[in-house]
Image (cartoon, rainbow, N blue to C red; front, side, top):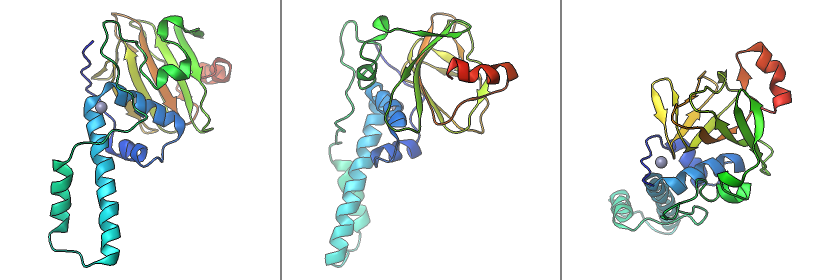
Length: 225
Ligand SMILES: [Zn+2]
């Protein structure tokens, strides 16, 4: 399965991940995208390496005079060196039938998509809440039926949606396997699964979703969304 990821992790989010500032739920979405995206793994390596070099330089500066051109030297060293690897991220193996859910996500669910017990969300949609210990994020696997929308909503905070199977469109953008959509409270959007197949994605939010429909807002606590 060739993965051609089009929608990547923002610099801000990747830097927060690299420095260990992200809560577990966000980290899970970032690490799962990284498992599917060589280009973001390279960006992460660069950030980690640059961070290490800067720390080293800062240490040297306390003991010696900074030689002229040291910033250029550092940049040259960084670009010449091999990228590092972050141990948490496991690259999706190249097999004939690779799992739909890459690690670390699959371990959180205990199985691949075929063996999961989905819970009905109404309108043909299903979900599986995923437990994390951070107490700040809501994490779930979502299954949107082919050709159907996720109810239109805006956010109390950030929302990350990572496509694992199938695809959805949101306005003019198409999101396929490996693509990550970052949304915040300023965006009201309506993802719609493409008609070919059901869309399975990982969704992480930091606050209950705000639905436009009054009925859905009333039903929200009952549906657990
Ligand atoms: Zn990426």
